[in-house]
Image (cartoon, rainbow, N blue to C red; front, side, top):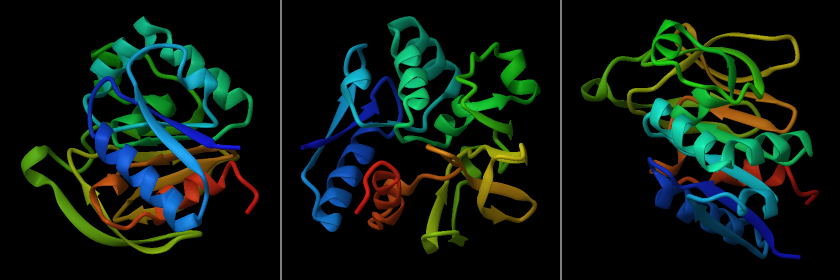
Length: 200
């Protein structure tokens, strides 16, 4: 069986995620394929889905308009892995901050987490820092206008923190990250994500 990962391709680091997933398949020795999609019908036929970074309000409008949001929610309900990075993390959450409310950003509500948009400042305050991720180890994390998790529900597993914020968390088959793992050559986050759906 070919393991298929859909990357939501409406905006953001789409191609970088596609390439990272492909490299992760190679590292794991798994036959798989990664496809970017802007239309409905692809996510529902996939084994896992990635929601990249970008502008969360724009991504939200497009995925709900195109019917992709409903497919992501169903995929999550079916127990298949869903990963959101940066803006994708915001969209996975149940609880947004005042910026999310002000922009009327519609959330997927898949993780019992509270998020803060732009927790680490604007674009010019982007940075890279080594963080320790539970189940993965030390990882050079790239933060670009990154959100952060300020609080989690009881069924959410905190995987990494930086300063006073939670920057990586997992709730069953849902993985949320503040940073951009696709902007490094390290494929371990994508490998971890793939292994969430495969017994190796």
